[in-house]
Image (cartoon, rainbow, N blue to C red; front, side):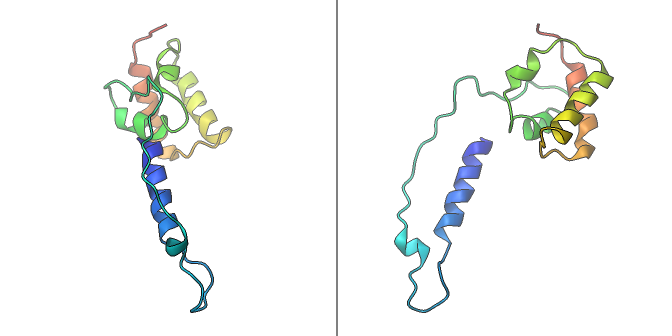
Length: 115
């Protein structure tokens, strides 16, 4: 879903570009032909199951990896999950607002272990 929204915004932005500033310069929209495409996401692309603060998980974690990557982790403590989420932000530069870390960790703590 997020990928499709990004592509839609990108295509809309490309359609509104202009090149140069002179009166004789053609608009980019006149020079570019846009074609609608269908994007099929890989199988298994599903949101996180319901739980406390699931919206924070879906909005922040799915942009980088699948829900199953998280759901099949062993049961971890609050301290370990907090460290892991902060590692995603600090080391891997995940664009997550630090104020969302407690919500994400609350969700992770509430998960039953599936491993």
